[in-house]
Image 1 (cartoon, rainbow, N blue to C red):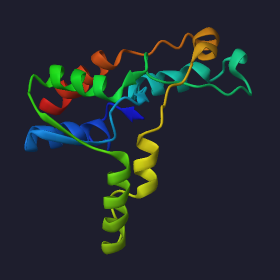
Image 2 (image 1 turned 90 degrees about the horizontal axis):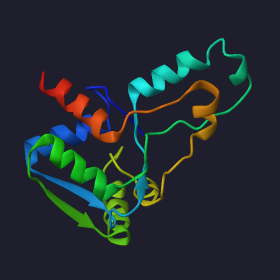
Image 3 (image 1 turned 90 degrees about the vertical axis):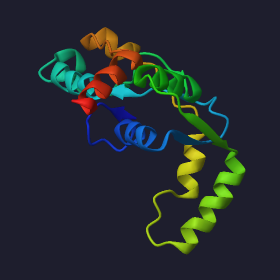
Length: 154
């Protein structure tokens, strides 16, 4: 999950929603791991592999600095926003049922049952090879989300 642009559909959208509504809905327990990567880290990685003989014809994982539980990520967002907001947790099975009904009623639903199922999967990726071959060193989520929030407030 890439974040860091004011128009991204991940964290920018989440932050705007939280600021407007004062709550956020999650699907599942929030104990699944995510490892969001700041957009500047993606851009730096692209630049660092170009014309680098060590990286020729290799495949790399790049990810955020540390895996976080979804709940931890929400706590960081809450802290950086300096705004209290309610987190409404809907169990996965109930979420899938509700979204299945929703997707049958509306054309082009914004969420599908498959997306809900994927939200519960751990997404944690080692990036040791990238660190070794082109000095990949991503920013922490705390630092990246703080930059994004400042940009959204500007």
